[in-house]
View 1 (cartoon, rainbow, N blue to C red):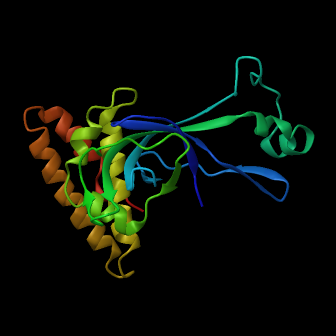
View 2 (cartoon, helix red, strand yellow):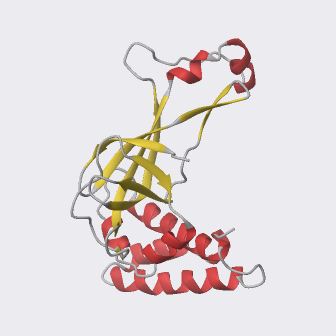
View 3 (cartoon, one colour):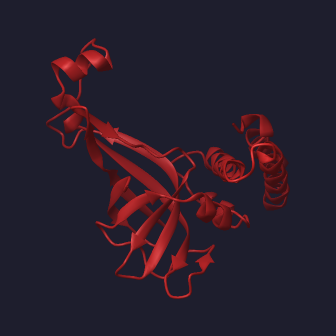
Length: 214
């Protein structure tokens, strides 16, 4: 099921609006996690573009319908003013880090030859796709260029998501060891990437420590 629909795209990034669904009369929106890997299938270009979520923003649709504090719980709002949730829109902002060529079936860990098309759909990347995209650490260099959120937090979150994918796809008795091994490998890569900035390197490594994977 699609998470969102692309509204704006470029070679380096995209903005997509989440798809709303109705469950038992309530509006439901699936929001991707900070640092998670997502995929946009682009049939016109015969590629699937992969990106990492760096922000999720919920706003009113225009300057007229502005939310205000009502002093009600979400359950009370659903009963008394259910239309409020329908008026909000949630946007997913993501940095592109790779793509899948539909002809060669190969995943590349660099920017795609074309951006996704507007109105293409955005999905959660599969465990296998995340593992392939994060097998090398070139994606961290692209994330380092994000300026609208703290890049250190984004890099650490994406590494944790990649470790979680490895744990999810592993036998239960091996999951923790596999995730930890990946985090150690990521720590070494970060040490090389930021070897000229020891304090920053140390800060990022601390944020990806195994205790944060669960």
